[in-house]
Amino acid sequence: MEITDRTFVAIDYKLTLDSGETIDQTTEGNPFGFIVGTGQVIKGLEDAIRGKKQGEQMNLTIEPKDGYGEARADLVREIPRTNFPPDMEIEPGMPFQAQSPHGPVQFTVKAVNDETVTADFNHPLAGERLHFDIKIQEVREPSLSEMSAMNAGGACDCDSNSSGTCGTCGGCG
Image: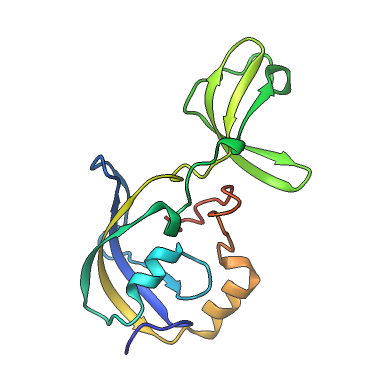
């Protein structure tokens, strides 16, 4: 069976950056499964595996525009230090999740001083070229429970190329 939209696919993968740093990978016997064409994974990965079959292996390089988008300067903001608990230790590189009027948001601390915290609301992988080593373990029609889970909010439903604020969805990256 060939991979097309609405096909369930399970892959083993290793994700690295240009630096060679491993960002994420599956463990033996626990492939990552998703339904193609539903926004559960980044566009570049979906595009690259369409037309492939079970058992195929490939090395992919996904450019930022087809991954998590370019880092955007307008998503870096200064937040008053008074918005955080006074006794909280805040350091650059710390990830945060906060509640906004529009729902939960995630950011990474870029800098901190007595007055402000510089928060980066870009996806942590924005601007990064992504390198995937993939083996396709399974290709099949999705089950009713898999389709139901997706329709109940299991998809990332993120267009991080424009918003830059989507979470990783446990494997969007």
